[in-house]
Amino acid sequence: NELYNIEKSLRQSEVLPEAVASIRKEFSEPIYRCLKELLEKTKSEVLPKSDLGKAVAYTLKIWQKLGVYLSDGNISIDNNKTENAIRPLALGRKNFLFFGGPRGASAAMAWYSLIYSAVANKLDVIAYLSFVLKKLPLCRKKEDYLKLLPHLVDRNAIAPGNGKN
Image: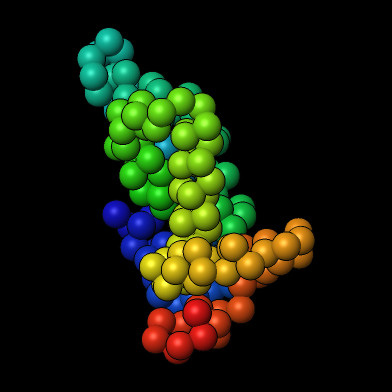
């Protein structure tokens, strides 16, 4: 909890990644070292084949990898953000069987990619898709299509209710 409280404080303060690493070194690293000591002590006190023994052994086995975030302010303490982003795709996996074959699956993949790119670029997805669907038939050359990509689109043109789309 202490490590996550430090991370929460860093997020709320909107600290730049360069500073995050030095703050983690000062405040998180000592806690991280204590946690390792606790795990090593626990390992010697529990049965190796018990659930706790297996969990402790696994954690110690990957300990160095877990600590990579301490030295790089761009790396998150966990992968929760990524897990949450892909959860809808994982939950919809059975539905993907009904896309009608490879062409349908490819089309769905393109739409999912477009939708999640719009979300990543902080666009109003409904307004963006409405804009794209209206402009798509008017595209004639590659540059016309590129202008519709979420990271290149004119944000003012897709604002809901502006009458331009």
